[in-house]
Amino acid sequence: MESERPVGGVDFPRTVKEFERFFGDEAACREYLVKLRWPSGFRCLRCSSEARAWVTGRGYLHCRGCGAEISVTAGTVFERTRIPLKTWFLAMWLFTSQKYGANALGLQRVLGFGSYQTAWTWLHKLRRAMIRPDRDRLHGRVAVDETFVGGSEKGGKRGRGTANKEIVVIALEIHHPKGFGRVRMKRLPDASGASLIPFICENIEFGSEVLTDAWSGYNELATKGYRHIKTNLSDSGDPAHVLMPGVHRIAALLKRWLLGTHQGAVTGKHLDYYLDEYTFRFNRRTSRSRGLLFYRLIQQAVVTIPVGYRQIVHGSEQPDPTTQSLDITCVKWIAPLKYSSEVAQSSFDLLLAEFNGSLSLSVGT
Image 1 (cartoon, helix red, strand yellow):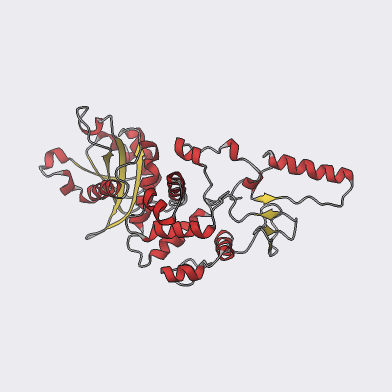
Image 2: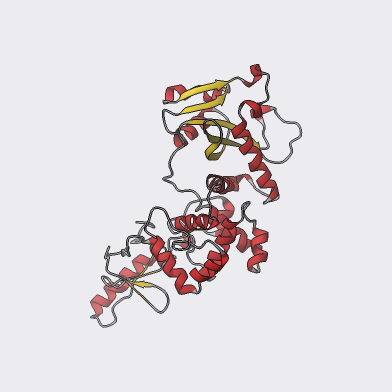
């Protein structure tokens, strides 16, 4: 588990048969999460003790230093789940093992969920774990262009002025003499330089060669430390997909995937997370084992801040006040039983203060 290059059959399952061997019961699932969450060994979130914790009958990790009980799932995608971890792992296996992914209705049918809402929520939680915040930026030769995602539009403006579709910018590494590298995508409010330039600076290393069309929104790239190569599509006589084949191929595959796997039922406020899923899959398209995708997803799921159903529905990433409780701190404090009245009252006050969030620990600290 601690190696930088995980080994199939040792660090992650490669087949369904190995999946059953890895995750035979809930204890095995919790142990797997512990190894991923603390790859260098357990460290208490309260007292920073590195003494080996013991597992209670309820599955908590009991710190030998301060007596805190730590939930393995708290502060992760799996927080507050009432469904067995093995079912979660199976959903993640199905989600990553299929080349074109899975939709909520298909997941509901396979896992036997009584509610479509449950399957839909699970998939959106997993999509939020598909992108690492500290991922490396693109470099070398990178082509950048925009596309529009949405249904058919009658009337309206032409070109970049469309009003009823979502603007998605695509950046793709171009390899020589042929082939493509990694991709980055994001939904933008418009195609102005104020929206395009920050995306490029955030996702492409300075000094890289950036290939774009002659749209004015890219004019300031040279002043930001990039080698900017423009192609005027109007003067060339060739269509855009001939002059910039890479990004247009990605755009076509993205739209085909949204229409095929998800039947085009993607709203604008959730589009970014579908783009994250497509990016996750495309950038790992050469992986020899689909089990490695499962490993990477669950590895990121244990460090992803949890979100609730209402947050997902409303497209908000702000913490939901109704979910702020002792479980968010990842710690449950066990007050001593045989203390004086003053000490007992102090312990009770500490417990109450934590429950109210005044002393809650930050997730991931």
